[in-house]
Length: 428
Ligand code: ACO
Image (cartoon, rainbow, N blue to C red; front, side, top):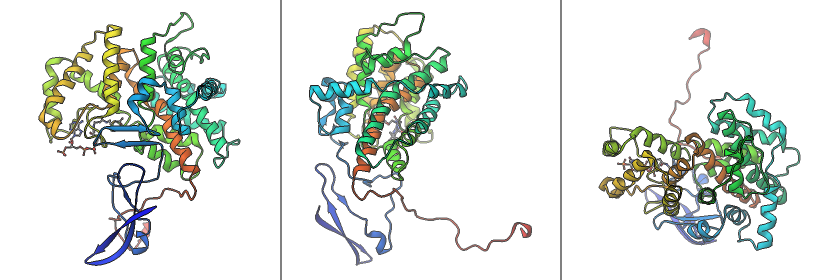
């Protein structure tokens, strides 16, 4: 609904009256869809001021440090709900009743196994392949298993693919890990919770019974919850863009995995641990903080800063608590964790970081927790991808359910050559 209008004038001439649309919260948006007919495009590389869609899933107020899924604040969800409850909320819009929760949990639990043929895909990878490379390839390959029975215009069929993806991602992620360390794949166990089952598939071996620690399972579930969705970030926007052409959801999620991989996004938790290893000891923290502040040096403190949160990252607040809880409950002593805590302190007190509003983000603490519970660094982004799958698929489903949905197709400011005379190769 248009509440007011903005006029766009160029050299004093009004060239377009643009409706201003209000959401239920957050910034109003100027609807520029008719601007093309006036002969102009907007220019916003990096989408610094562009709303690409209408969505009712997640609300963020970066200045106030607010994050809500379907209106529920993230700290309440992290502390009072489990991950599958959050998945239900993201997909369906409201918190489930006990019966709905039980049915949903049961559905996810019963979809955790993958087709045995999919297992064979792993054997084509080199053992030292990055698990994100395996995840990207194998998730994309799911399209070949679930293509013919999928009509993306049918809401119940879209929901079925959402359930499959949420259920199978941990199985595929754990297989990538087991393959990379040369251990046999561990099949899912329906007796366990979602987080427990993932830990079981990661850490158990046929020769020995593995008992899941409740502290570790709780921390893992919280990591899943805090990464479940984050509005129109790079990977979610990638999934929406891929899905806007009508592509298969498994292929769209593979695109999301690829987009998440980069160190400016989901790869930050791995990059953060690599950085802590490079720093190595407490006496080198100041040197690295100075490097991060030096404009001539491209080095950045990984795990610090966020495009949207300029006050604090509300997920980081909960993750920080969990991090300290896990470290003390497990009685972990690790020099890298001491480096991380020292870095956190220095950066929080340093004027450069304060002025630029660079706070530790969720990935700073999640990396430390994952390391403390024995998960190798190259699995960090895989776990992020697993957790974010529900967000990706909820956005994909929302987009396809909206009337008049169009293929995503940005325009450009062209800066190349024009109207050149082509000379055949023989004459050049
Ligand atoms: N260390 C040192 N300086 C930094 C850092 C950092 N981590 N992050 C930003 N800055 C500085 C920049 O140099 C820039 O300084 P300038 O204004 O003097 O040029 C200023 O802060 C603003 O930085 P931008 O890159 O313009 O901010 P943007 O919002 O585009 O980037 C980003 C946000 C990508 C997260 C950035 O802070 C960063 O690279 N952080 C490290 C990587 C990271 O942790 N990513 C995880 C994001 S959270 C997630 O995906 C779950």
